[in-house]
Length: 118
Image 1 (tube, rainbow, N blue to C red):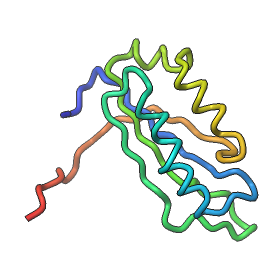
Image 2 (cartoon, one colour):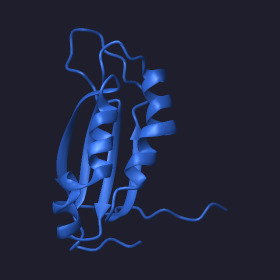
Image 3 (tube, rainbow, N blue to C red):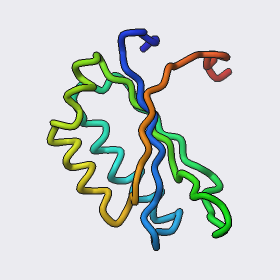
């Protein structure tokens, strides 16, 4: 779906729960958590970007283990997000998996469009 200026786009930075390995995070995220996100009413599109180097060395700030980008069909759909059963399910699923997440409203700017594989 092409970008639409009236559709809110939100970036989530996801941080794994202490004691959860990057492999455990990745498996749970891909095999379970994204399924919840895909069911959230009003989501127009949803992408995830997994950090390929999420290790922490103890001397630096934690790095997000994943970034999720969701576009909502409308401002109203986004406003209703926290009232949905799917959002409540996702928040409950965070326990033991995601310690916290950052949320940023973002604007999608296409700099180099995706091309079909040749």
